[in-house]
Image 1 (cartoon, rainbow, N blue to C red):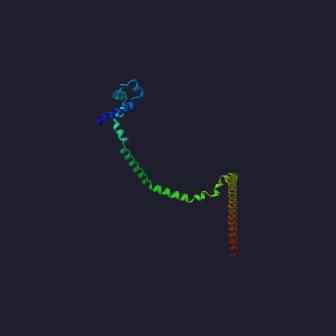
Image 2: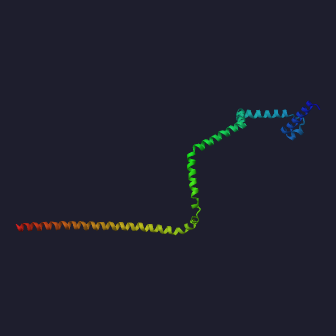
Length: 192
């Protein structure tokens, strides 16, 4: 065989394979003369009818080039690099906060042994034992408030008693002073 015949046979094989892919097996058997071009024209007509009926499809057709550009490997690589740059910018913008958080985490890790201490593991068990003590403490606090009020009342009464006694002594002191002055005056008149 010559080279052109091999090329034609190869081309015919490719067309047959394309027909098998595009046309279903039933179409191939029912219409052996069916051509791929006829099927493609039929599909094209159906697409044009659907496009005419639906505005959304028209918009998609108009933006098909743009959509294809979004699927391009170079565009995806560009987007990925810009995403990586944005991530780096976010990390750099939060550098101070990350440093503070890291130092806090280091401090927590230093004190982790204290948190894992065996004495802390019994806290739930001891909490149940503390419940009655908490109730006793609340009752004692109420008793202390009542006692405090009673002491305040007694101090008020004591202060009023001391105040009235002090006023009585001041009054008696004034009367004694007046009596002494009267006695001195009498003695001074009698001496003269």
